[in-house]
Length: 115
Image (cartoon, rainbow, N blue to C red):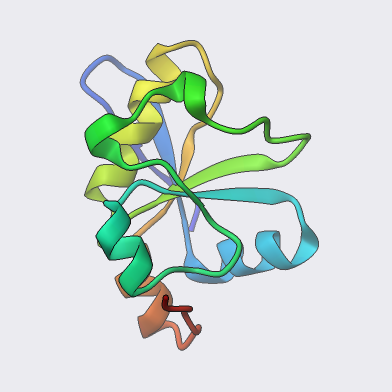
C-alpha cells in the first residue's frame, strides 16, 4: 500500500493493507493493537490482537512489542490513525495502522474471532 496519512502536526501514519498485516502477524513481526471499545472486541476481533480502547488510550499501557512492529486497528481506520498519532506524540515510533480497519480485513476475505 505504501501510502501515509498526514496528521495535523506533521507526523504521519503508514497505511498497511490487510494482506501486509496478515503476513506480519503470520511471521510474528507485528503486534496488532485494537483501539475499539471492549464490547466491539468481544463481538469480533482479529486473532492475536491486544485491546487498548481509544476512549482510555494511554501509550504507556501498551505492551512491550519485543522487536515487533506495532500496528493499530479499529473498525474503519479513523481511531487507529488517532491512536498512532497519540503514541507518536508520546515519543513512541508507532506509525502504522490497518487501513480500512476490520471492515477491510473482512472484505479481503480474512476471518475474525468472536467471544
